[in-house]
Image 1: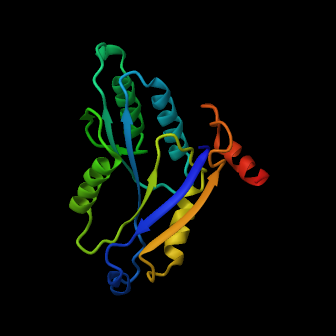
Image 2: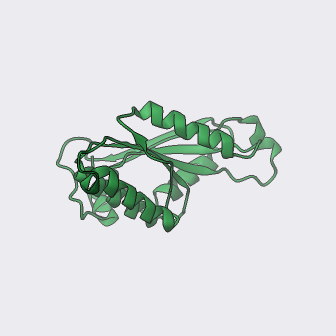
Length: 191
């Protein structure tokens, strides 16, 4: 897929919107990913995703849960390379990655783990909205900004906001790894 702009935002306690004067909703991105032992192409796609997250006009936290299979040659494994990529982007403030889970895990296991982190780290009356990303997505520079506008536009009267703009939903080849956000904008303009 070229870019999936899928948003599933959830407000945990709608009634708290009205009681918190001046409250602005908090938006948090979630990413769950798994790496096969030698899947270096997936690591390259993750790197491309994180570069696009780094280029956002509106910064939001991106929480990452990841797993990787063991490899006979640990010095040359997708897990080692993914770890290095995640640490680099974590050091620059783009994301917060949880420690690696060993072995294959389902997305639901990853999201349950991320939900627990959110639950432990939110303020008692905070009502965060979350959106999901895949490790092969490319974020348009205004992705988080548009999501935030959709969430704030609901004026606290909505518990779920869903929107979708999916460029090439399986009708064409994947974008090359060197693709940029401008390529996505151009594909969107072309219909």
